[in-house]
Image (cartoon, rainbow, N blue to C red; front, side):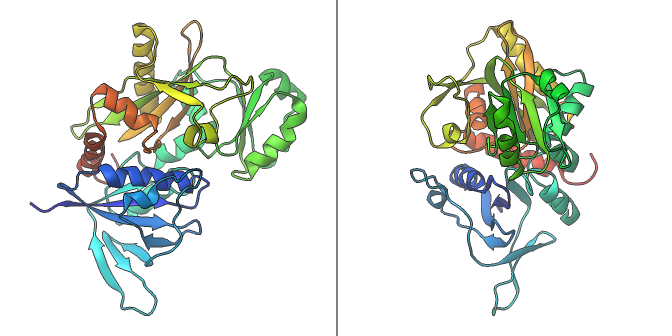
Length: 359
């Protein structure tokens, strides 16, 4: 029986380029080689498509050095064909693909852009479609949609590119501390914790290095809990056991930033989260509601704050969560009973079963 050809697409133009590369390395190492033939496709920071490495070890973090896509044989997609555009060489089809696994985090990948390209090319792909990807990527838009469905979100102010800072009324509404972040980014890139209003303008400027639209959120007191959602080929959608992120640093201003997520040792995951059974079931049920509210397919990770009284607040929804060896999404599913290789197989098979087009 012939193998299913899976194009694993990674890198990309967003600030999360290196995290995407690490996620792809984990997928290359764990996708069932007896069932799938991998076609690695890297996207450079400038947007060029190249033949990527199939060596997972080349996509690992080395100390504090992250991998990246730099150069290689130039490629384009033509329908389901991967076509070589190597300068000076004859143009030719390198391979055809059956499905794409777009392991792209952030803008120009997780935001509906590549999903639209793949819809036009009629290539099935892992993860939510164009609308859900775009809506979830924009944190301000996601909060509006979640709130419209009666789901709990925190207090926030959206700053368009025309707004330079918060008004006094907005500051009073939010209080201190606040978190200032790019509206369309992830991996805690460009985020600042502001504990004094004198820090605000610098925090907005930092966020705008990633995205002109900025979100300013009131801090929510609570435990950080995440829950994975997975769609199966038969259409079932289930929620994983949740994980709790514990930041170990004793510094008062410590939070779950980029360094803590990927290169530090100041955070641990408790899976399942050490919560009462009733709260765990509410987290799982609310994660499923959020998945449906944004019209997601395939997978998502829903991030919560859990207050001392068990009150839930949805922080955000990630439609292509991290797939690194330390990422919560695959770990949550492993504890729930779906190991990493089975998880990847499920995602690919669900994408093929769903196909493309309106659904």
